[in-house]
Length: 303
Image (cartoon, rainbow, N blue to C red; front, top):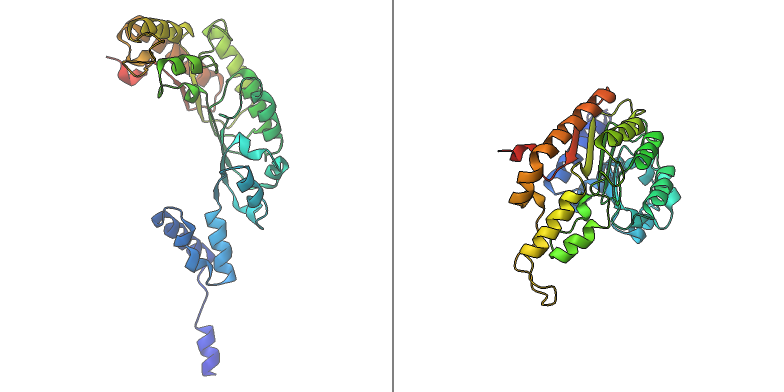
C-alpha cells in the first residue's frame, strides 16, 4: 500500500513546462546543445522535447550539412525557421518539401548571378511548403516584378516579406571593387528596368496584390536614379583616387550618403520619391502597415 501510494505521489511535469525549461536553458547557453544535453538524457520524453526545441531554428551551413540534417528522424516536423545559402541545396533539394512545419525562411542568394536567380528561386520555392508567414531573401542580384509574382503565387500567407540586393555593393575593399560590384546587381531599377517611379510602383503593386495578409514589406533597392551612384563613383574616382597604376587608394570607398555634393543634389528629391512610393503601396495593398526601402539619403539623416 505504501509503495503504491509513493508511486502515485510522483506526478509527471507537464510537457509545456518542460518545453519552457529547455527554451530558457538554450537562451542562457547561447543555443548550444551542451546546455540541454543532460536534460535530453533524462528520458525519452525529455529527449524529444529537447530536440524539438533545439531544431526549431535550423541554420544550414553547407551542402553536406544539409544532407546529414535530412537523415535525422523527426527533423522535418521540428524545424519552424530555416536559414541557408542557396548553394547549400545542391543535393536533395526535394527534401525541402518535407519540412511541413516551416514558417520562416531566410535565404542568401550571394552564390547566384543575374542569369541564375530566376531558375534557382523557382526550383527552391517549388519544393517548399506554402504555409510560410515570414520570408527574407538577401544578396539578390535583382528584385523585379517577376520575383515578386513568384513569391506571391507560391506563398499566399506571407505576413512579412524582406527582399534585398544592396548587400552586394562592396564598400569594404577599394573604389574599383565598389564600382565593379555596382554593375553586378540591379541596386537602382529606375530608370534602367522601370522608366519612371510610376511604372515601378504599378508593376510591384500588381505583383503583390494577391498577398492579402502581408503587413510588413522591405525592399532593399534604391529608388534614386541609377546614375546617382554612377556619377558619385565618377566624381570620387577623379577627386579621391590616386592613379590606378599605383594600386594606392588614399581613402576607403563610400556611398552617396557620405558625399556632400550628392546629398545637396539628390537628397530632397529622393526622399520625396520614397515617401510617395510608400504611400502608394500602402494604399494599393490594404493589409500593409509598413513599407521600407533602402536609401542613400534616409529620412532620419535629414537636416
